[in-house]
Structure formats: C-alpha cells, structure tokens
Length: 339
Image 1 (tube, rainbow, N blue to C red):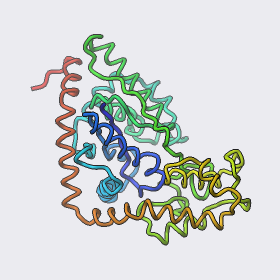
Image 2 (tube, rainbow, N blue to C red):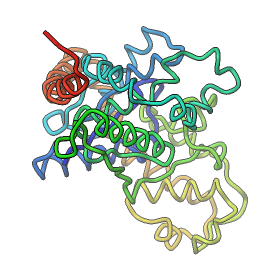
Image 3 (tube, helix red, strand yellow):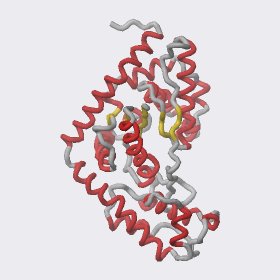
Image 4 (cartoon, rainbow, N blue to C red):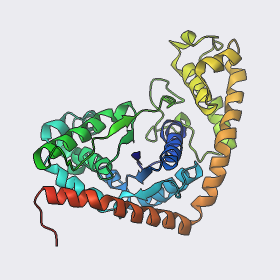
C-alpha cells in the first residue's frame, strides 16, 4: 500500500482542511505503516508558484504547514513528510510527462477554467500545466491510492490517462513504467462549508475570516465565530430530512458530527427540537475539545525552526531515494542518455 497526497502550503489551514484531509492523512499513515506500506505527504510549494505569490510569505507558510500537520498527528516516523522544492524529481518527471500529456486534456480541466477565468492569455504556463505536475507527484512513487475530494477526481483521472499513454507508448505490457493510481475517498470525509454561506466550501481564500475556523484560532475566536455563524430562526429538526433546505444549519450539524466522529442523524437525535442558542455553545465546546490541543502543539512547534527544517530535510532525503527508480525508468524508456 503506497499512498501519496499533497497539500498547498499557502493560507491558514482551517477546520475544513483538518476534517476533510489532514485527519485522514493521519489515519492513512497508520494504515500504511501497519501494513508495511508507505505514506508520502508533501507540501505543494512548486504548485504554489503557478499563481502570484509573495516569496517570504510562501516560505513562512510552508514551515507553518509542517507545524500544523505534525500538531494534527502526522508522524514523521511513520509518514514521509517533505516539500516538493527539495525533491527535483517532481519537476523533472513533470517535464518528461509533458511530451505525453495533450493540450486538449489540459484545456478540459475544470480548475484551469475556474482559476483562469476570462483572462486565459494572461495566466502563467505553470497554471495551465500544473495538472501534469500533479500527475508526476503521484506517479513518481508508484502510488496505489491517492486521497481525493470531488474537486480533484478529474486530476487523478488525468494522471491515469498520462500514465496509461506513457506505458503504451514507451513500455511493454509486462513491464509498465507507472502504476495507475486509484482514488481513495474516505467515507467519513466531511464536506465543511463556510460559516457565512452554507452553499460554499470553507476556504482559505474567502475574504472574511469569520467564514472559517482556523486551526490557529484561540478559544475565544472559535467561540465568537460559531456564535456569529449564519443560521436561521428555526430549531433543529429531529431527522436529517428537516435540514434539506437549511444549508447553514446542516453545516453546523455536519461539523459537530465530524468532530465527534458520529453521524448527523445521531447529532439530531440528541439535539433535535433545540434552538441554536443551545446548540452553538455545545458546538464551540466540542471544537475546543478537539482543536485546543492541536493549537497548543502548533504554537510550540511553530517557534522551533530547527525541528521543522529537520523534519523537511529528513523527509526530502527519503523522497529523493524513493523517487529515483521511477525517474530513471522514465528516462530510460524515453531513450534519454544520462551520465
């Protein structure tokens, strides 16, 4: 079992990142480690430069993300934790795969259309080609599984298409260069929405900080954000069907259920019939119970630059070693001579 996943180091990590991805990283690292497999988690700093960015801010946020991941339970002794920039094989393999990827495939990528908007001509080449880097990220380690959300399924399908075409064009059926990765979609992964708009995902890029619970928020900030979260005047129903047309209420119930590792139905069975004057303080208390220790650990780790640098250096050395066989096989398959 080889699992690979990456996370953007830009912006403050928030509750949606934790419940939708980071907590599952911890579960996956344990599953992979216990089964004798490997789990590679990387900070996608090379992806970050496809968009306008501040270099100093990117550097600082990369270190903060390492602190966040470790505070959330990612164990460098069980998982390979590193940043792309320290492993040149990622960008090398991206270039090797550029000859296999097709313009039409990249043109159809939904996220390219969304991020480029109407000004496609003004976007960086990196933004257009970053799905090929994503393919390289996972193919480099012969990943069997890649944790993906609904918005990333298309990118994994592209990685499979690139791998299949490369294998067909440059390798034999008995000795393919790349493993075709399968999606890993955790059943319990919660889709956490904005506290200001229940129809939009909680996001780092949302202008209002009140729309999200940051993992760095203190107890008072968490309580205030939950208190001011958008709701409606009706009490909670006793059954999930009663939330069908109430996205903000559903979001708060979903958050509580995810934190408590239970179901929305179980939450409603306990709190149905009660108003948000009762439910919001209970939710704030649950948030502090789960996120409080994470924040304390994060604050301590964030101050220790030496430890953070050491974690990344060790992970990068492991990743460089693990990536070498696949990169060499790709070079050889293409007929490229290396000294």
